[in-house]
Length: 426
Image (cartoon, rainbow, N blue to C red; front, side):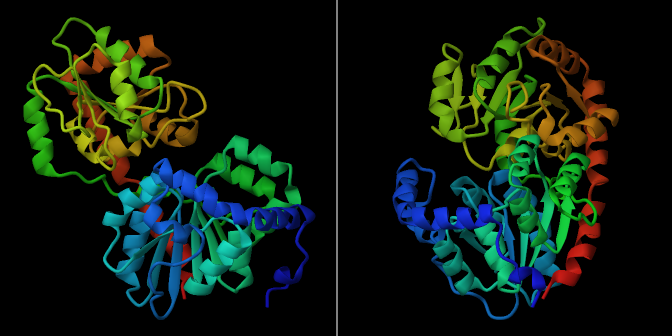
């Protein structure tokens, strides 16, 4: 047995475990309330309490865990390779949000099981592990739930933290509990940060990284129905299309105002794809009196439509294939940090971001240097940038080609990571 497992828990972790156990009886009530607000799947609430809804496959089992849509989609290349290279293994993917399950589930290879992750109470984690008995757990980004990690390790499973990301805010929070985070990070046999900043923070917190891996750099292009792309492009007519994707409030209204300030060519069609599609009705009301067509409501896109509101899940690939220019949301306000610029890059869509790109600072630096993306400091700069790109077809074409070439160069990261993960597989 690993001697580390015999050590007493730090007082902070012992207190966390006791508090989680004490609050466990409230979990059902909290989850039921979330389900009524649409944030949990009411049919699958038992999974959140560690009660599996399907049988465990025989033999070795690799468990991969991510939390939200972006992180779970970044797992797909890794899941696909494991399914192809090791068909003898069972593969379990857990996610933490209803949206991630709805987007990821249909994309998983045949035979790969999806479950919701258990809440981090001792009982829920115990039930989950009793049933699934994983041989290897691969955690993505910053999912550092102490009970889940330490109970899994105590049962002899190997653990890896891949594409690990620790924000400055998370780093400051964990720094207040140094013995706790050292214990949690010490449970991982392999740690692969996604960038230099996360690596430095993880080292400071006690991790021993073995290289780097950013799964979001290695992902495949987002999918879309080609027939639907052609239909919408025809419905939009000859107008250029600006697609603003993964937007947050109040970016939608700001970007709509920017469109009104563009130079005197025929106005482009604006497609808005909010990060949280359930905000669609609110966004549409904020954009009045503009002519808005909501995709979720089945509204028709035609030559009179000024804004097409793509308030549906899992259709960013469709929206980006329509875009002459893509504006990346989550970057013009504060506290979001931007979204993945490789999503438009893989599809050859010139990308423009606002100034807050802290979540993907290294990617934006590389993309801008490669001539594949631009950063606008504020709304007036966004007007100037869109005017420049919409008026220069050759500039857009060159940016799109540079973006595709840059995205293609990222695939090698997955091969290097698989070489490090391979020895941990059962």
